[in-house]
Picture 1 (cartoon, helix red, strand yellow):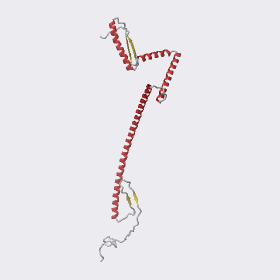
Picture 2 (cartoon, one colour):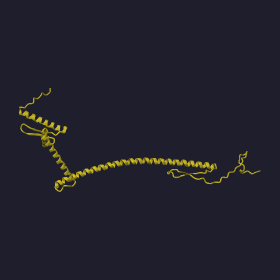
Picture 3 (cartoon, rainbow, N blue to C red):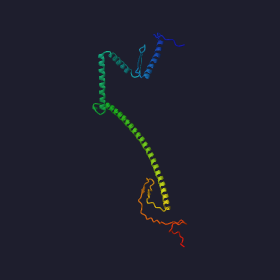
Length: 252
């Protein structure tokens, strides 16, 4: 069976009334604390017992809560009156003007101006502010330098990788040049043997560079003047030898 509905009325028994007050007071304080945490609200709770004992809860400050309550209530009442509303906005403008003057004065003091009338305590506070500002500036500067160093390191790695690729391509070209030189040298040797075997002298010759790493240059030289003596004779029908050529046999 569920609990029956409790009639909300004053408890006549003082003992029961005190017990109920303690339980419900603790529950109300707990709910106020949960409301302040969950909803990020500014909560102020004031409780007076029947005996005049005070119980209160505030997540910020009870004084600031009361001041805020009084100011907000007065503002709400003054918004319905045009004259009061004008005075309210004038007061807000004066407050903002005063805050602007204070900020400008603090800025001049941070720049080293208007500090002649400050005492030791004010100068110490000003020095602490400057130290904190310098610390923040140094941290920001170090972070920027670290980011720039990381970016330069990344670019250096990319350039290094590109250099490696170019070095591989250069080595490949050198190997191709070396193979081409070997083929050209072998081709030139074969042609030289063919020329010596046919007793034919080419009027032109090619010069091949010996540097393996250097590019191959072909140079065409001018023909050298040579005396060619050609002996023309008739061939013998019996031995197919040219007539007039001494074959070592004696004439009969």
